[in-house]
Amino acid sequence: MDVPGAVLATFGLFGLFYGISTGGDEGWTQPAAFGPIVGGLLLLVAFLLVERRHPEPLVPLSVLNRPSVKWSGLFGVITFGMCAGTTVLLSLYMQDVLGFSAPSGPV
Image (cartoon, rainbow, N blue to C red; front, top):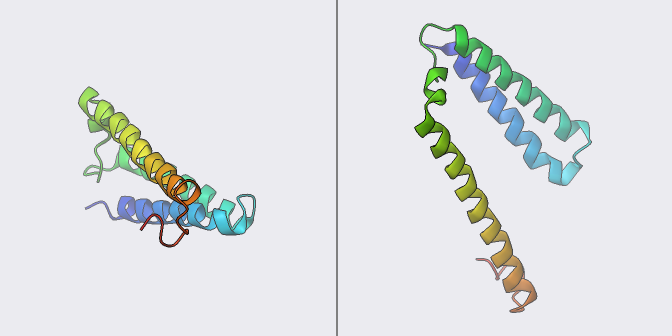
């Protein structure tokens, strides 16, 4: 079992997501947001390095070289971006054009 890989992936993703969620409140250049993002990215790079050398990795990196996996990932990111964009635009439309208040509009 790849315990070092699991620990690095967990803390790397936590730092990245914590920094992103804190950046809107604290400011993106503040250490409270910038530090966890940089730390999370460094831990994720360390995760990739550990996964290359481990005999039983959590994520076999050879799988990521398959064309079907690459295209699926690309289309997943595109689909997520379209859904997130639609949610934001629909919320703004309901507030600005239809006159709903922010708490009652998108919900």
